[in-house]
Amino acid sequence: MPLYLGLDCGTQSLNALVIESEGREVVLERTLPFDEAFPGYGTVNGALPGDDPLVVEAPPLLWAEALDRMMGLVAAGLGPELARVAAVTGSAQQHGSVYLSSGAEPILRGLDPAGPLVDQIRTIFARERAPIWMDASTSAECAEITEAVGGPDALAHLTGSCAFERFTGPQIRKLARTDPEAWRHTGRVHLVSSYLASLLMGGDAPVDIGDGSGMNLLDLSRGVWAESALDATAPDLRAKLPSVVPSATVVGRLSRYWTRRHGFPPADVVAWTGDNPSSLVGVGAVEPGVTAVSLGTSDTLFAPMTDPAPDPSGAAHVFGAPTGGFMSLVCFRNGSLARERVRDRFGLDWNGFSEALRSTPPGNGGAIMLPWFEPEITPPVLEAGVCARGLDEADAGANVRAVVEGQMMSMVRHSSWATPRVERIHATGGAARNTEILQVMADVFDAPVYRIDVSNSACLGAALRAMHAHASSAGPPVAWRRVVEGFVSPSSDRVVRPRAGAVEVYRRHAPEHEAFEEASLRRRRR
Ligand code: ADP
Ligand code: XUL
Image 1 (cartoon, helix red, strand yellow):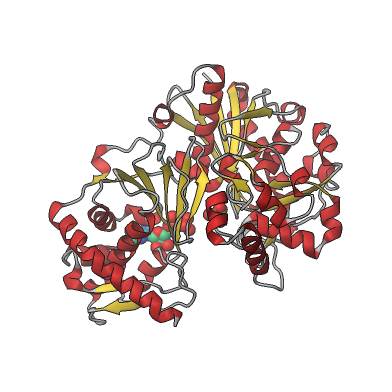
Image 2 (image 1 turned 45 degrees about the horizontal axis):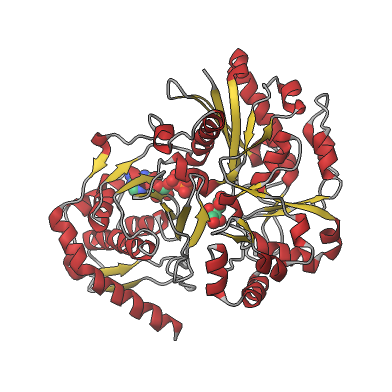
């Protein structure tokens, strides 16, 4: 029976996961934290320390060395079973860009299995550092691109998002302007995802539509590079970009380097994608109606969509979905961060926090909190500052309920542009183990919430995508529901159902909450 290898190159670590399709089992998991496993590069939390806090970069050579070591670990872990690996793909932190020189491709094609990968690719970079998604240094370029394309609405309708500092187009524009010499030497601009796919196949991998839509360069509805965005970004850009393919494309096979050096079979290499599109699969949100909510340090909501209409407020994103169609991505910075602030202020632990939710009524007697403990992404709030109405500052129970209700009401409102109809929610992340928080979510969304226990959804999503593309390339397309079954099928004993009385309270409460949020945002803009 075939095995499928999924990799995930996150900000701080490279992860691998191997699944077996018949038994629906995860047979191997490995992780390599960059700072500890590769101290020679001097990264801190996966990025290179620098003087300007807005500039955040990482060494692409480090990702290559990690990939080489990880493939060795996978080979050793699987032993004789390695021969069963049928397909491999991966996901990577989105938006980061790797600049390869014109001479890179022949080097990638001719990698010698006798020596380590890093020693052979040191010369392929037109720039030795890759800006990553945490970089915020391109505000000027965002404004220029937006203006050239015809304003924020035009750019969002074309590419799925307004211009954001971390997106690849603004990053490319900055490089072309500040370092024209490096830009001239650049033969290929890769995303982190397509760079790693290129190393595996020994060539020039395409960008997939999922990760490609995090660039402000792709005509999202047509799945091709958008000429007006390219023109607005940098000279000669078209020739320096890889081609774009649907995410389920088999783009090549593991090159001789991997088969000879580590003993892999010449398995299919499927196009890599971004970590968020990959997580869509990894949490089983593979059909419209299912919304995924990750309650981590920040909270994120993402869901499949059939139409690429962008967020009218401009705060969120539409990406291509690896399952076909599109997906929304809405980020809320004040997630666990805000819940912890309230918990700590009243000296509670998570049990006490849950007890406070159990012992207070839905609707909180009309008390409202907008939990902007830190600047917020959705809705955009530049300066931190919590807003409250009718809330007794000394009442622990009311404050705990107010922070969670405030978050959930905001989540519903700011995601309804993409998913007006939520049939079920798949909840992940550290705070998803808290049933009382999920109860508020179920009541506010009026949808059942299924807890999904997946520790690395992007990595599992990659392994499942490898399985799907491999199976579909050999026969008729395999239904996504069948692909995720057994790996992320939520069981009914883990479901938190909405309660009719509470649903009604929140339905009546919603306009008031919205009015308070709008008034608070207006006051701040003055
Ligand atoms: P990250 O986004 O960093 O991957 P995780 O998904 O691991 O984060 O979530 C970590 C967060 O989960 C912690 O910051 C903590 O606030 C929260 N958390 C852990 N246990 C609970 C709990 N029982 N109730 C609510 N929140 C919790
Ligand atoms: C999404 C984004 C982050 C990175 C993190 O737009 O910037 O989620 O993908 O890896």
